[in-house]
Image (cartoon, rainbow, N blue to C red; front, side, top):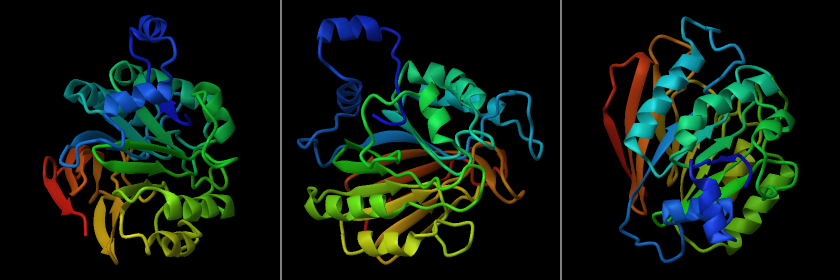
Length: 296
């Protein structure tokens, strides 16, 4: 599937034994994701965003070294053994070079040996270069975009692609994605559904330019519970109608000293999510604090 990185150390032996098990099926098994999932079950997923990994691991910005930040966090996440990890866009530093993604893959390898990693795309990513280093195991749900779906603990996770232009600020889902979303939500089984998209959810020139049209599609569906996003390098939670808008902190660096640099240790259930901030730098005032959100 698009943007899916999972390389268990014994995968060759496992595939020889199973014969037909695909990477997607392996992911689903790892997450216990199927329609018979216990509705009271929980799943832990490490939520990262804005890793901004450069080809040069020594490159720094605002006093932070993104590559070193990811190296530290990968070790922590791998040790804590979540069911999956998800990077919500801007995986690469600026223009999504092949060298950026080679370094990203190298840094993620210790985690990919243990758990599936989903990688979304943001405005500092490049689809073509990304898929040279992270080949897709199957076609994207939406042609020309990097959109994928997985399920766990009675919850559906949809990773969208808001990349419009490489290394320019604004984002766009586009008509093909919006049309697919409308059709999918109309026919899919009604279970708690969460969207992950890189760009901020406003009406500014650097935001998700079709956010209002996006929200018009999802808001009639009461089973859509939250939209997670990055881009602003800010940690913030608010609610619009019945849908939570959750701005993930950046892992590479912050834009101002008031914001943390880190990731979210998230425990999902059909009833809601517990978000524990794991701040490794920046403003660490809220480090280890948990926000418990009950779906409306």
